[in-house]
Length: 472
Image 1 (tube, rainbow, N blue to C red):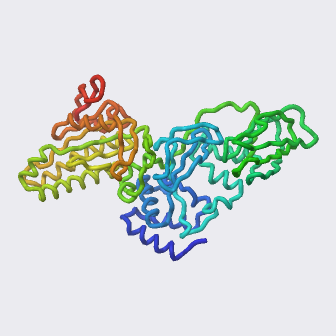
Image 2 (cartoon, rainbow, N blue to C red):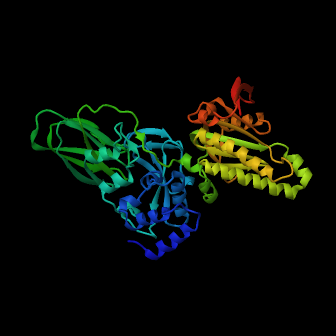
Image 3 (cartoon, rainbow, N blue to C red):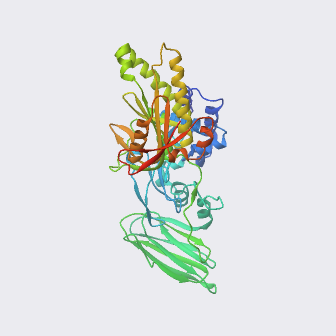
């Protein structure tokens, strides 16, 4: 049910949040008013951007501001790379953790913000109530397919794995503790996989041979995270699995039918989605969702992030020459310029340290383009001054890092951070230095083609051996 008054008020708030491209908000309004319930549940903003011909960065901003306005709620999903099962979902980054177990695949994974953590958006119940707001009241089918399945996992042929599950799921039902249910199936020659989405209980039965004219009845007991029997053989034809849940926890037990001799497969590939790493590189997220903190004591890994450090040459002399207050105002202007450039290149300023800036980008090419534009932007600032007060020094490096919360701020920690900072220390005035990892990354060579680039090797504190570096 749509709450017209609430919708209108919150759309007005969204429209005033920032300048939007033409018809961006109206496209979202159409979805909220007339979209199917399934289309309003766990929306992928990257897919929305593609379907509505909106820039990806603006679409992400749209959903973040819409969440702030109360139109949506944000979900952080841990998605299994093998079966696309939503192992866990969280309303907040603060409740996210970095280790998870998939009961369907019975495998353990280390969560990384750029791999298995998917960020989605669901319409707020105050705006429009949909059946997915009460998952415990959903049918077993709806819960399994929509709440525990994710469309981002794709087969080699590009088919969403959840569609394979839909076509293979022969029976599924809920079982309260100490209850039983009959699950009828009628397999051909095939492999029947029984699974509980709430525990590790599972079985595998092979259907082969001559079809049975009589109904085969097979008792299955769920207890202590196991299914007994765990395997067996049966004939094609009518089969009734008599499933008893003897445990003290609810079960959601289903039966899948696959072709005989199902071969092991590689991990699924993922359709484009908003990852946790991409969200941390959003300035809008960092500016407006400051209460989001990572509670995991060891942090959460980011497999690949490009970090950019800047510093001002001669800033101490500037403070002495024009005074602390005037110098502070001018330095803030420089910060504003650097942040504007960072955002234009799909990055986010992580923090400022004195006169220095640390920024994060998902793409090395974006970071390099930003570094070059930063240098130009600061030179433009100097043209309005009697002398060159601002002389920028920039360093870049890419690699793995740990996302942590330090001093109530989302931050990055690790050797990648250390190297990026030390590469910046190599830079003189108006220079950009970068490591081999950045220089060799896709798209960087074409960006640097108009510039003179010098290669050398440098000794960096804490790094064994000389490190290849490039000076622009």
